[in-house]
Each structure stands twice: as C-alpha cells, then as structure tokens.
Amino acid sequence: LVTRATAVDLITFPHHALDPHTVYDPITCHGAYVLDQRSGEVHRYIAGATVLATGGLGRIYRYTTNPPGARGDGLAMAHRAGARVINAEYVQFHPTTLAVPEGENFLISEAVRGEGGKLLTPDGRRFMKEHAPDWGDLAPRDVVARAIHQEMTLHGYPHVLLDVSEVKNFPERFPTIYAHCRKLGIDVPAQPIPVVPAAHYFCGGIWTDEWGRTTIRNLYAVGEVACTGLHGANRLASTSLLEGLVFGDRAGRAIARQSPKPIPEREVPPWEPAPDGAPADPALIHRDWRSIQYTMWYYVGLSRDAHRLSRAIRDLRHLWEDIVDFYRRARLDDALLGLRNGVQAALIVAEAAWHNRKSRGVHFREDAEPPAS
Image (cartoon, rainbow, N blue to C red; front, side, top):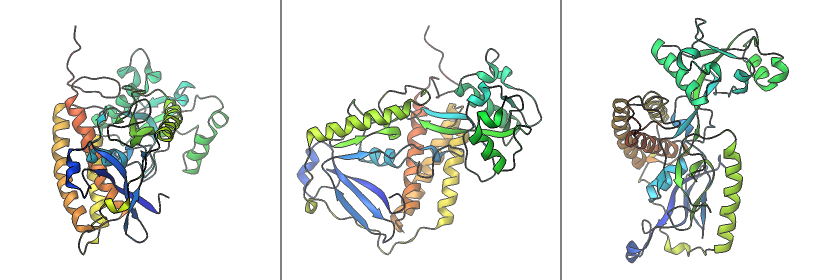
C-alpha cells in the first residue's frame, strides 16, 4: 500500500466544507485526500471515522533506526488540521547503531554492553567513566547516547567503537548482529563495531484519550504518532508494542460503538492540483532533506540549548517557506509530500524543545532551569 498511495491531507470541516455556515462547528474529520502514486491523481476517501497509524518521525534526523516512511506525516497532517500535539520535544535516541557509510542504522542491542561490551573512542580511549562515573558502560540509554554524541562533537569523530572482544560466545549470543557485521566486512568479535546514536522513538505526538480519540471529532490516532501519556519523558523498552496493541484495540471498539456515518462525497470539494505543475526536482528534495536532518541532529538532538534551538527554528522556518512555495508549484508525488511533512514535523519538535526550559528524560538542555528547591 505504501508504494501505491500517500495521504495528502485530512478532510476536515470547516476547512474543506462547501457550506460556509460550518465555520461555527467544531472541527470534524471526514476522511483524507489520498494521492495515487501511479496516476498522480488525488482522490477523496470519505469515512465516518479516520485512524492515523503513521508511525514516528525519526527520518527528520541525520541518524535513525526508523524506516524510510517515518517522516512525521501523520503528525504534520493532524497539526495542520488543528489537532492538539503534546510532548513533541521528547525524542528518544538509541545509543548504539551501526555506523557504515550510506548504510541504514542497524540497531546494536544494549544487551551487548550488558554482556561485557565496552565503548571506546576511535583512538582506543574508554570514555564512559568520564560521563557516568557510577555506571560506566552500563549507564541508562539517554546518558550513554549523550556521552557518545558529546565525544563525537568535541573531537570530530565520525563514530565511536563498541569493543565486543570480551563478550563470551558472541556469535551464539547475538547471531543477528554477528551475521550482519560479518556481511559488511566487520570481523567481530575480534574487530570493534563502529557505532553512533540514532533517533529511535517519538515519545510525544497527537494527544489522545484512553480510547485513541484526538481533539478533532471522528479522528483517532494509535501507535507512535499518538501520545497517550504512557511513555512520559523517556519510553521504557518494548512498551510501545503493548501500547499499539492495546490502544489499537480500544480505538477499534470505540469506533464500532459509535458507528459514525460518512457524509456524502458531494459535500467534499475535489482536490485542486497545481496548474501546470512540473515534476518536483529531486535535487531540491534531496538537499532540503539533508538540511532538515543536519539541523535537527546538531541543534535539536541529544543536547540542546537556547542558541541552538533558536537557530534551528529560524533555519527551519525559512526552509518551510521555500518548501511550501515548492509544494504549491510542483506536481504532487510521495517525495514532495514527505518533505513538506518532514519540515513541519521538525518545526513542531524544535518549537516544543524551545518552550520547555527544563531537562527531563530524553529532553536534555545544557542551559536548563535549576529544579525548584
């Protein structure tokens, strides 16, 4: 399905209503405008209830464990429609993902450090005791991720190393990691694994109640795009799987009980394409994505402060204006839609981080306000 269709925007009244009197009504979702990637046409899909289950936004960062579609699409669409978004500053980073040129950030389990793996700089220096004297290599994931990021930033390292030479029975204990590293020419366990932190999970999202309902009538959100409050400021491992199962079921049951009826298609205006829109320039899309990812990584990443965040917001707003102009003139395709959503999702995260001046969980500010005494 993801190779055939891409949601363009939610159909919400009064935004898309033909009747001007609906301006006084509460915002209500009636489905979505969806792009047919093969024909290039945008169709109306009318529904009594609409569920957003679009995943996270890791792709707005330079390094991420997330798949290509995790661009913040659902978050951006809901935000444009007027849904409440909360806790967007809380982006969890995994401390150790495989660092290979132009490769995907394959996750190296934290259990490897639990079994005796040691973090080293590229010149062989153990550094975790400097950042976490009591815990060393077994520090919590946000502490380890920040320590690696600081070493990389201070010294210009492209990555750090995970020494697994002392992990007993490494091939049997971690067969998937062993096979993947060997496939890439990394001679584990004799050779250390190059690793970098990577954006892993979005703890914030579209506010929902205990039944998956958002602040927009007939619009539901489940999974990583939603914020149920379950993850607080720092998700515990594997709880997101249970959350998706539980809240997906609850949202389905709530919709079944309510049984909302779809409105007639004639009440929804057809999508108006850009007149004589030319195909989107892939060079511009690629370069704009790089700008988003590097801005988020260096300014809205593992360590934040007012100067970095203000520069990020300024740069992203300028980029947003350029991308919106690009979007209005070009022919729609999946890449252009993803770029528009990506820059908006990045702005949502950056602005939330700017407003929260306290360090908590995965939101770490070097200039944090001191805790109240």
